[in-house]
Length: 165
Length: 154
Image (cartoon, rainbow over all chains, first blue to last red; front, side):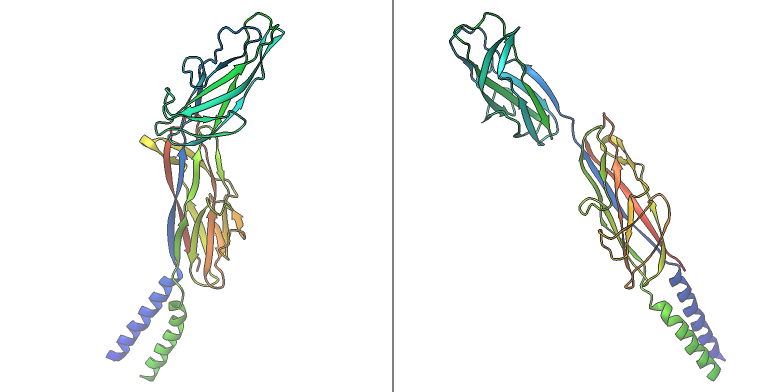
């Protein structure tokens, strides 16, 4: 009789164990992640200025000319690689008169003194990297080639730089 | 005593198949990764994206039916408690008996879904979603937790 009781308990235990195994539930978790980048901001900080030019006399503004070279200031995500693309005029205009401009040159640096700057030829796609502070400075120099009969006047053109991550 | 032995053997025979069932396990294999996002530009990750979709692997009793249900966040939390809204579409989750990302049956992660484990007791759930940064979303790293609950149906 004692044996019978033990066996009955064993059977009951097995049945209970089996019932628990039927109702299995479990779960796990994963993480969703994203990194929001600081928006890029581009500021035309300084005009490319040729000053007075004379008919028939070419004039260049060196990209190292911190006073007269054009400058763009860029802020954005620290250390982020970016692509620069330039739209460069081939002439400056004064009313219906035009003045050719060419020989564009660029320098990029992470400070506004061009210290440690890297030269490049501005074009449709130039690679660059923002500094650890999220800064980038771009200078642009060029040359104008007035004709010997260049009409007097103030000539302007627009240089556009687009920056994307 | 004979009756007792018979009863015991019977009980063992009944119980052995139940003990042979593989326990249910659920494992988070891969996080849902939105990567770099820009303020104001939604970022969509498809459940079929092998690198960025989230993945759970499931093991359990062969061919067993199970109920899948998600606990989904409505936003990711970032710097200083900043929130970035998250959304999940009706087809943003997928189940694969073969655990292959290329062979999924899509389902709505916001609704419970019944699926069947494979002949060898395996399955996988993949999940995509959309991060919706606002135009003035604060820069930085954002995270959230997605939980998959699995219940083997009797």
